[in-house]
Amino acid sequence: MIELTDVHKSFGSNNVLRGVNLSVPKGESMVVIGGSGTGKSILIKSVLGLVTPETGTITVDGKDVNKGDRDAFLARFGMLFQGAALFDSLPVWQNVAFRLLRGSLKKPKAEAREIAIEKLRRVGLTPDVADRLPAELSGGMQKRVGLARAIAAEPEIIFFDEPTTGLDPIMAGVINDLIREIVTEMGATAITITHDMTSVRAIADKIAMLHAGKIRWTGPVDDMDASDDPYVDQFIHGRAEGPIEAVR
Amino acid sequence: MSTLLASIGAAVLGFLAAIGRLAVFTGQTVSHLVRPPFYGREFGNALLQIGYFSLPVVGLTAFFTGGALALQIYSGGARFSAEAVVPQIVAIGMVRELGPVLVGLMIAARVTSSIAAEIATMKVTEQIDALVTLSTHPMKYLTLPRVLAATLVMPLLVGVGDIIGIYGGFIVGTERLGFNAAAYLQNTADFLEPLDIISSLVKGAVFGFIAALMGCYYGMNSERGAMGVGRATKSSVVAAAILILAANFLLTEAFFSA
Image (cartoon, rainbow over all chains, first blue to last red; front, side, top):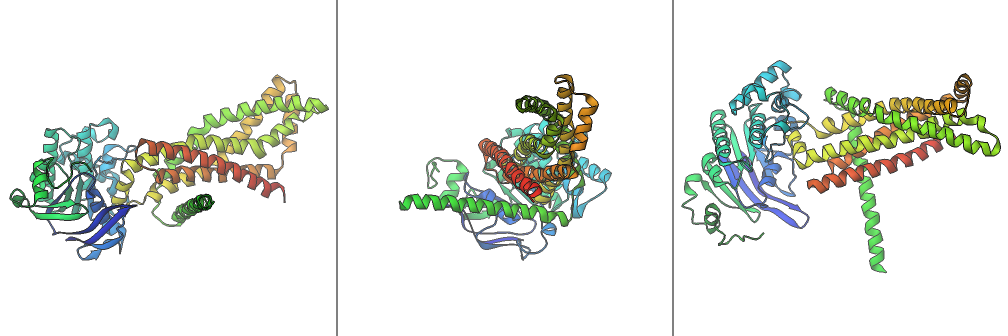
């Protein structure tokens, strides 16, 4: 279980997280929604230790994320970044197998390549993509390579940061289905950051809405439409009028 | 008056803080030398990029500088009937001073800028964050291989630069100024001392360390966006060039004033 308690994070005078409390049980797919700039990405980066909160605690299975063996901790995670964040200088298969080519999970090169090709196939990419460079791929293909990299070491916990941003509706649907399938198949705990409501309905077991630096509402995806919270209602229906200011 | 003092104080504090950050970064880089894992492939790539692919620019710079130096010394020496010192002064000028400094500055232009732009772009596209999530320390994977490779390969580049620079002077001396080839080479060899060569190579190692470190430091601390990458690249080259020239003065003082 991932647990955030009273997490605060500021950048200068900008108080991004102002006391976030959130629990994500093991094996659950949690989607965090909220407007742009509300700190959704900072939230998952805090869990990974990429950003250090000023106050509050973050635990995974009861252990503080900032204590203990970092490598062993990070080996439990996979992450799909918003822009895929593929390494330009490495061919696709080495991006996917990055973790399998070095460190505690190191495997022989041939085996790592085989696993990479299998993961590429899993996300709908053919083996001929394996030796290309990331710059030679379309945005949708890069996202899928990023997804293959996130699942390559079969992590227990996967984070998806804006997985469908910048993709056409069909490719977005493909990515959503893949994420849902992978999370269900692997039994992984997942946190997805998005403001794409189609993704929310396709991926989520539960939803948390982040607004003004706090979790405004949380509940099962099926309860989202019946929520009487005016902030959630405005957000999921994309209305310009409501308590959330359109100009931020 | 108090506003002026406050501004001066803020600038001094900012400068000291920057020195502190750079010192910490340097310490962290060096500390990874003795802490595994080591990334041999990245080190090999860095050797190739910084060393082998810099040879053309180093060679051309040294050749033309050696030639120009020979002409300058000849025309300057003619004012007091000392034209014959061309081989000796070209040799000492190239090996002690111009070889290491020019190679250092060319490496600052070619390698520091390239490292800073590459790492800064990796930072703004979240590739550095991705490295961390893949259990790979960015300092170990990106900084240490580049700094180590530059420190080790720069003495070789400076050595090559020194030789090509002397050769440039030799070509001008024998083809344009009428020096005897054998006598030119003999004078060059006789005049150079081991300390001249050692100082040249030590300077090369120090300049290589500075050039790669500045590229990595500004790349890692880049701000967001294209402007951030541009600013990091520019600042890295300026800082590397200034630090190389400052280090050159200090090393020259240490080697030849004792």
